[in-house]
Image (cartoon, rainbow, N blue to C red; front, side):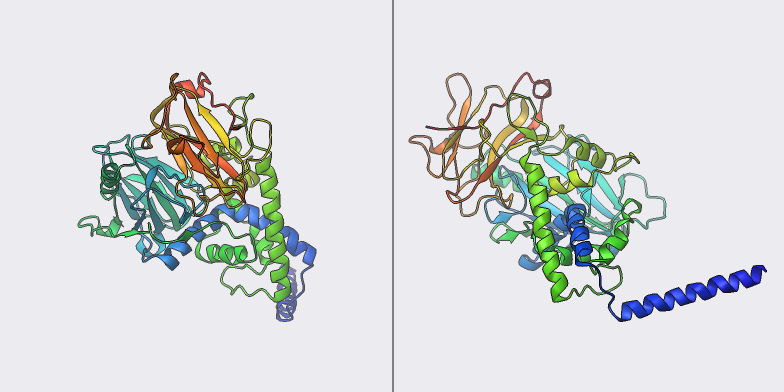
Length: 470
């Protein structure tokens, strides 16, 4: 009886397989409504990985930079750096990791002597593996961070800060802090950043010199594309990376869109049109959630933390809580910026706003004032930066993007406060305290606190709303 049942089961499986093959050979139609619904969810779910992949592909396309080397900007980021909300008051360096080709990879961070770094090491999905630098695992003593690929089975050697990644790719974002914006300070910050080393563990006994590629003079546009090309980029990630257990429910979802591991991605014209519309709808849904604002730092003002709390908690723990997976919050966060921070609020903290005190959208054709109260509780510096509301990149074709406590010539009021102005033209005599905006576009603001102190988190110091000026 057992043999008969086994034969019957095998026959049914064979028939099912033949039916599936026949269906696939005919190109079985999928309901367009299913494609659109699943495509919208795929955009939200896939946002952090597509964000990473776009930066990688942009580097490979517009620079001579390569994976497992260092791409850097020899000047503070200006508008040609079209990544998401970059900091124009630091020197940026990035390593795009590929442990599939290199095997375990070492990122060597120098001691905080003659400079300091704020470093975040993340996976392809921008899940933080660790922070480095004075507020990271090495506590400013310097350290060798060893990134292991997901298939690594050996016992890692001693002497490394070991990071086990669930993806082959990812990146390390390294910001070399600036004491000021003069040429000497910029040069010092760049030279300190160039003390970073990246090399395969297999070459640790005699590390080769790390290659640095300068992206300062190129248009580096890695802003999110909300059209059918989003899914091409998502497919590139799926083909390169292993499925993470928590994401296996997406396998069939993506298959409905023509994205399947080991198979070519070839959507027809009809499907491409549906995907294009779905990407735009996903953008609208994500933008609506952002427009509501996140959790306000203090209830009387509109500034909110730039990351939704549930997403920050989940990512910093490696999504350890089996009852939480805030994909929606994650999707919103990675439309606005990039990288993940393991210990948020130590090296830096970000406040964001897109409305004035009365709740109206910030309009690039109008002039606004932000009064930064005296005695900002930071160990290093504060800055206020304007970004394009639609792309979340630096406003194009502007001569500057921010005013910081380290900026040259910033005027301070008699009580120690600083007025920062945003608008198409500088108020008379306020050039040093002014950030230009595009009169044809809306904008948003990011207030950075580098080395935030207790008084900030205890809300003894509060940042007031941006208000229309005259």
